[in-house]
Image 1 (cartoon, rainbow, N blue to C red):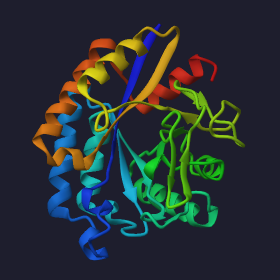
Image 2 (cartoon, helix red, strand yellow):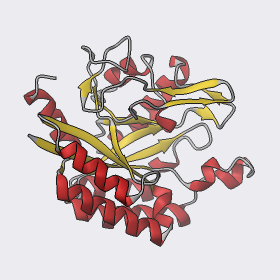
Image 3 (cartoon, rainbow, N blue to C red):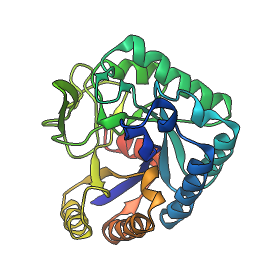
Image 4 (cartoon, one colour):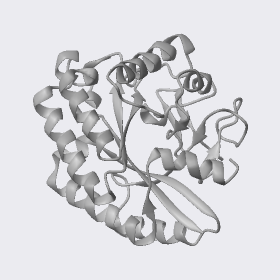
Length: 270
C-alpha cells in the first residue's frame, strides 16, 4: 500500500572511532561539529525537514551535545519538523561493550533524555551505537517514554574481539512492536522498532535503487529507516551521495517523521 522512510542521522564524528588517537584527540569540537549539523539541516530540507538526529552520548563525552550551542540547533531541528533522539555509544571502544548492563545504560539514557527535555525538546527515539541493543534496554526506553527504537539492522551479527556487540539475526525487515524478552521478534512491549532499510554509507547508489524498488513492491504498509552519519557531511562527495540517495527514496516512497510512525503503528494495530 505505501512505502515510508524515516531519514536518520547518527550524530557521530570520525575521530571518535580512531583508537590510535588519545582521549583528548578523540573528543568532538564545537568548531568541527556545529557546521556539520548545519549541513544536516540543509540536507533535511529535501525531505521536508522530517529527520531524526540522534545525539551522541558516551563515556568519552557524556553531555557535550547538550551544550547551549547545540540546543539552539536541536530546537531548529524540531521547528523544521524533525526530532532529536538519543544515541548511546556505551562502550570502551573495541574493548568492552555495556549495552546489556542496566546499571550503565540507565543513567546514560535518562541523562540525555532529561537534558533534552529540560531544554524544551521532545525526544521519542533511540538508537544504540553500532546498533547494539537487547532486552535490557527495552524497559529503560519505556521508563523514559521513548516509544521508538531504530537500532535494528536485520540479520546483523557483530562480534568484536570475541564480544557480542549486536545481534539482529531473524528480525523483521518492517516496523514491529518489540517483544520484551527477544528484541528480534514481535511482541507486546511499549516500544516500536523501525528497522534499517537503506544504509547510505555502505550501499552503492545502484544498490539503493534496487532496494527501494524491492521495498515498493511489498504489500501493506512499510516503514524503514534511512541512515547517514554526521561525519559523512565532512565530505562533499558524501553530501552529493546522500542527496542522490534521498532522491531515489522519494522516487519510490515518502519520508515521514517519528510522530507519524507512531500514528501508522496504531493504524496497523501494531
